[in-house]
Image (cartoon, rainbow, N blue to C red):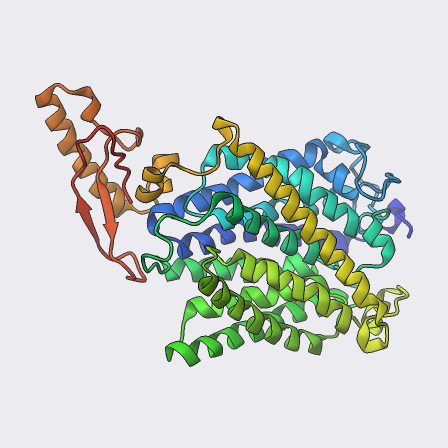
Length: 485
C-alpha cells in the first residue's frame, strides 16, 4: 500500500484528529463509569488512575511504545524496533495502516488506544490497589503486554497480521488483553475485604450514566476513526457501533428485569458497553445488520458471566473480565463468522470474508489470535504482579485498615465528595483540640496526613446513592488505622 505524502487527504486527517479527541473522552468517562460502580470511599482514586494512565502511557508511547507496537520497518514478527523512539521521523509521511493521513496524526490516535487499555485492566483491582505501584505497572504492562499484541495484530509484519486476522479496532490488544490482565489481578491480589459477607451496590448511578455516555460517545471515534470516509466504511463502523450498543443494552435490561422486576440504568449501561466491546473488532468488517445479533449475543453472554462470577466467588469488581474479557472473545470470534467480503472490498481490499462467505478458515485464524492474546496477557501480567509484590515499594495491595477505610484517603488524602470532607474535618478539629489538651502529637489528624488517626465514615448499606452517612469516633489504639470510608 502506498504511503506517499501526495496521498494525504485533508478530510481523512480532520476526521482522525476528531476521532482522537473522541477516544480521549473515553478515558475520563471510564473513570466516572468505574467510580460510580464502587463505594464512595474509593471513587476518586479510580478517576485519578485513569487520568494517570493517560499521562504515563503518553510518555511511554513517545519514548518507545509507538515504535515497538506499530513499526513499519521491523522485520521481526513478534515486536517492533526502535526506529521511531522519541517519535523520530514520525511526522508527515503516512503509516501503511493509514495511508491518507500524516504519520503523526495516526500515532497520536493510536496513543489514545494504548492509554485506555491499562485503565480497563486496573478496574479488576479496584478498591484495593495502591497508586504508586499502579503507575509503575501501567508503564511496564503497556511495554510488555499491549505493545507486543498490538504489533502482532496491526503492524505490517506482525505474525497475526500476516496470518490474516481480522481485528479492526482492538478486540485482541484492547479488550481481550485488558480482560485477562484483570483476571491476573484477581489471582494475585485476591478478593476485597468483606466480599461475599456484605451487600455492596454502586454508590452513584448518575456517575455510571455519565461515564457510560462519555464511553458511548467516544466509541464512535474508537471504532470509526481509522475507517475510510470516501468508501463509506467509516459510516458503517459508526452504525454498527450504535446498533450493537442498543441491542446489548436492551438485552441486558430485559434479562435483569426477569429477575428483579425493575428497570435499571446500571444494567442498560453494562449491556451497552458489552455490545460495543463485542462489535469493536468487527466494526468495519461486517454489514450493519450483523451488529444486531452481535450485540444481543454479547448482552446475553456477558450478563450470565457476571452471574457466574458471583456464584463462583470471583471478585470481578467492575465486571472487567465478564464484559471486556468475554465480550472481546465473542467479538473476535463473531468477526470470523460475520465478516463480509463485500464491505471489506469497498476500499478495494481483496478478502475472502468470514464464515458467511464460506471462508471457514477465518475462524481458525481468529481462534489463534484469541489464544495468543489471552495467554500472553494473563501470563505476563501474572508474572509482573507477582514480581512486584516481592518488592516492598511496589507491593500492590493496600493494607487491610486502609482498604476498610478507603483508598481515596489512604492513597490520595482527598475525598471525592464534599460531605465526606466536611464530616472528616469536623472530627479532625475535635481531635486536634483533644490533642492540644493532652499534649499528644500522635493523636492529631488532617486530611493531608491520612496515616494519622481519622474518623470512619460509614455508608448506608445498599443505599444506591450517596445520601447519608454515619460516623464512628476515631479509635485511640495505636494499632488501629482510621481512614475515613
